[in-house]
Length: 203
Image 1 (tube, rainbow, N blue to C red):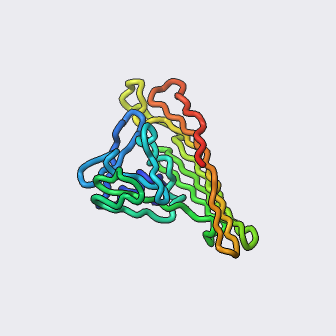
Image 2: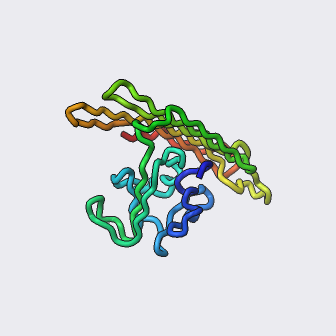
Image 3: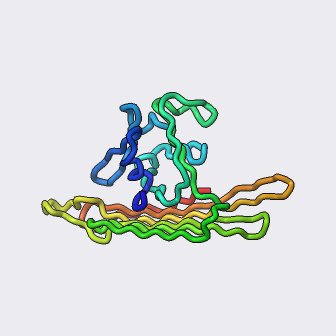
């Protein structure tokens, strides 16, 4: 979906459903074959991901415009990528450094002031090096408390997400892939100063 993250992208899928596991913080979880959460294995380009305490929020940390494709496997799967699959596996593929789009910009705004900004740029640097830069900013410009109970109807949130991926391809056939990712996410359900989550670095 043009406006959303990985959790929202499954709203149009008949095989995968997504629901709120915690309405206060906005944490969401997927459901396959009637079971949710830890029973479905999440893979990041065939690498196990979204484990432990990061699982409730990890779906919202994957902007939809960063994805190249999503593969969904229902039922028990192969153990090549892990043995945690009971109801199925979901594998996400990100935009590659060899993408032919030099610049992609996406802006989405909703009537509840939820705003998303996505930038993706693939650069070819000679015959051997290529890189892709991915940026994402999302948040609520305004929150609402219609029943005046001192809790916001939707959590106030602001997320900054940045990733940089590199590919080196040698004429001899040797390939080297590496990258880094930085994420900052803050959420608050009350009309008081929000709690802050620190920087998380992935490599």
